[in-house]
Length: 346
Image 1 (spheres, one colour):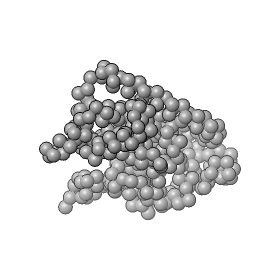
Image 2 (cartoon, one colour; image 1 turned 45 degrees about the vertical axis):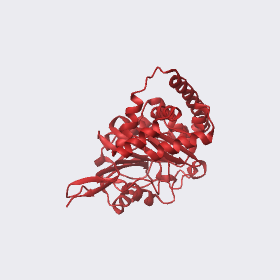
Image 3 (spheres, rainbow, N blue to C red; image 1 turned 135 degrees about the vertical axis):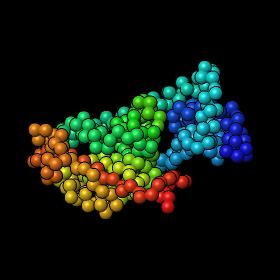
Image 4 (tube, rainbow, N blue to C red; image 1 turned 90 degrees about the vertical axis):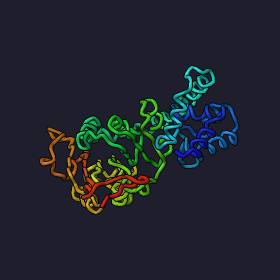
């Protein structure tokens, strides 16, 4: 950093309230409403502090509908400096301890609201789960398909409850989940905070237009999302766009079935996808199909190998879960990242 940038960052942190805000944002992300409750200060005052800190680059902001969330910068020299400032603080300081206690109370209130939403919809989700193999089997198959990584950035499109971020959290340096449902994002945020997955974040975002540059991720997951969409091919193409050379896309969805009631009861737009149908979407998006697997609830061995998977329709009254693993072809030359984009050296 230049001396001017260092001075700007230090000035941004060098005020009592702003230093307290920085310490809070190092623990978890907050919106302006949260911070006004925690710090017992007015919204305009808090907003001015946040604006100064964001302009200095020591915190980052992201919009979620009408709300804006903030967190400590987690990359670049500004982020390193912000983290060093927070690490130098005495955790037993009475003011900071009171702030943490109020922040925990705000977090509990958010968690209770998110739990209410989850309970209201749990019966519907549980009824669908009874139609296919256990979630533990699906997750084990996903775990085996995507591999151990480690991944620099893993993106989950249609993250829902954030379960996929939890599943792959231990093997990724950073995880981002995108969803349009604010209530689901609140629930996911609560779960990730409780799990201590500080490298995992959720964002409000349209999975047809994710606010990330081309080639930003080395792994993308689309889990039980495509059957809700009018244009699943466009979603696959957007997921593929995010992949760096050699990056992998894991799609999990239902095989073709005839359970028409899911259209009305659960807003399913598509009654599953065949192996070839989704394979063609991957190919059209520039990806190679590495593997395919069916988890058939009526098979003696629900974990049949790729070679044994027929890729056919689900049995009557039951749902077969299918997994497609695609890969962006590796670049022929050496690659490097510049300004968040992957470039191929000549």
